[in-house]
Amino acid sequence: MTFPSILHQLPEVRGKLKENVLLAPFTWFRVGGVAQVLFIPEDEADLALFLAQVPMDIPVQVLGVASNTLVRDGGVPGVVIRLGPNFGKVDLLGEYRIRAGAACLDSVLAKHAGASGIGGLEFFVGIPGTVGGALRMNAGCYGGDTKSVLLDVVALDRRGRRQILSVREMGYTYRHTDVPEDLIFIQAVFQGFEKHPSHIFTQMKKIKEDRELSQPLREKTGGSTFKNPNPKLSGGRGAWQVIDAAGGRGFEIRGAQMSEKHCNFMINKNNASAADLEELGETIRAKVLVSEKIRLEWEIRRIGVRRVNHG
Image (tube, rainbow, N blue to C red; front, side, top):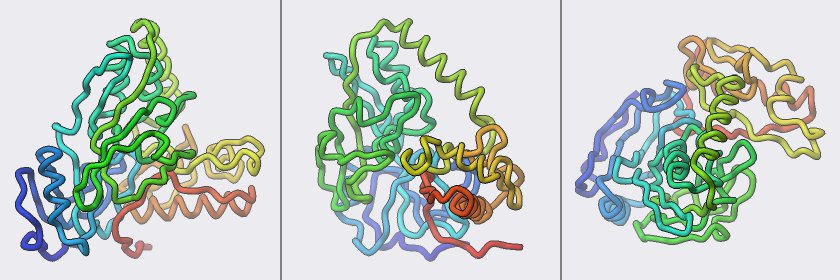
């Protein structure tokens, strides 16, 4: 499926504007349709000017490295923004503070902090996404989360206006922020503490080893499919445990499978479509609701237009 041209409605930019770009190669699942327009801005000023001039009736959304995003087969109407290299820089600010652009990989942020003797950010090495994604979902693992180390965030609103938000203004809860969906994160400042680099890298090595043992990292996956349920409702069990109890481990629909290794991870085992993966997820949600009386919430972000599944 392709979309009609809207380039004539868009402002001139210094970055790249491309029509009907297949998004599957950008995603960890390797599925999904085209972006009506893909915009890779040159820098913050380029992005701000674009947002200020793009018509408000044209949808705009950001796609990072898509490590936890399912792009639907029908594609994504409007403009998909992918932040380029100028949004991935890391700077040391003193007092064990570090600034990172939204396109910086979480693991790169962790390594920069570690090399500089800044502790507290080790958990980022276990998150397979970007700083922007971590800010959007209060990403965390291995006892740490974004909220606990964040100082403030720079963002652009839908009109291209610059905003600076404190961690309190982000309104964080578990895997959620209260800030509007159309706010585009540009960079953030994190606060760590003094720690010897050798101790930091020892901890990060253990995190990476634990992930390798427990998660299907070499598969076409998207990380945790569902948020952990309320422990009061689940008896303290995580999402993978209630999925396992409902018979979800290894459950498969047309090449889309809940991993045998970690059953809260969907994998594209054999040329599954986005529709296959989404159907698998909804089937697992239904099984858990019936079996365990728990309503799982998607952690994976799903964007774009659904297409009727085959078979």
